Image (cartoon, rainbow, N blue to C red; front, side, top):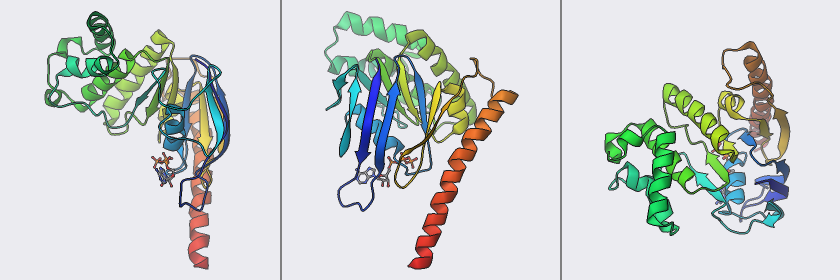
Amino acid sequence: MALEIKNVSRTFEGSMKETLKDISLSVEQGEFICVVGPSGCGKSTLLNIIAGLDFPTDGEIFLDEKKITAPGADRVVMFQEHALFPWLNVMENVKFGMKMMGVPKEEQNRRAEHYLKMVQLWEFREYSVHEISGGMRQRTALARSLCLDGPVLLMDEPFSALDKQTTNKLRADLERIWEETGKTVIFVTHSVEEAVFLADRIVVLSDNPGCIKEIFQVGLPRPRRNDAVEFLEVRHNILSCVEREVEKFAKEEYDHEKMA
Ligand SMILES: Nc1ncnc2c1ncn2[C@@H]1O[C@H](COP(=O)(O)OP(=O)(O)OP(=O)(O)O)[C@@H](O)[C@H]1O
């Protein structure tokens, strides 16, 4: 599904500044977009608005020309916290969302098996949540999200609480799954390296207010190696862009303090 973000701005009640200002972006069906930028620049706010969990003060978002006004089955959100139910086992957790959506039992079983195999957890389906590692929990959450079969996957720093080795493994898994399923992915991350590993395009947000500062087309062949010279070059360019933003923000804070 194609996503069209048109002049989206968001100001929170009681706030003196716009969190997001005039964001416009066209995302093609099956594209992998990463959003990076300084802490607090509005990445999660943008994702929440696309999810229909929050609303723009100005502007509109369209999914295949249909305006987004609420959460919907066409967009599945996955957060940093896996939010699994500790009293359910892996399989039951994966089926939970489908149950809530009234998916017939046979279809629940079919999808749960398919996606648990895809995330390599089929052998662990009877394990309870406390018996599996953090990475396996996040893979359970990923299988649960994939089972909902939404064409758009919205991911808010899904791997940031995990150790480096597990994160690297999950990134590679996600890339493979994205290639297999053809979903449109919007992925928020603090890690420029993660963005260069995963994205077709990387959107850098500026801070205060959150605007699109630059959009990078990554263009490196997949699978990508984070020690390849080309990878490091792209990473360096984007990092400089984000760091300039952080420096600008720090200077503004400093000037503000001086004037106070
Ligand atoms: N519900 C809300 N009410 C008021 N202000 C909010 C609300 N949600 C977010 N904000 C403010 O909007 C700004 C952007 O927050 P947001 O979480 O979108 O940034 P972020 O770029 O995702 O941050 P981080 O990288 O630290 O996760 C922050 O100043 C935050 O305090």
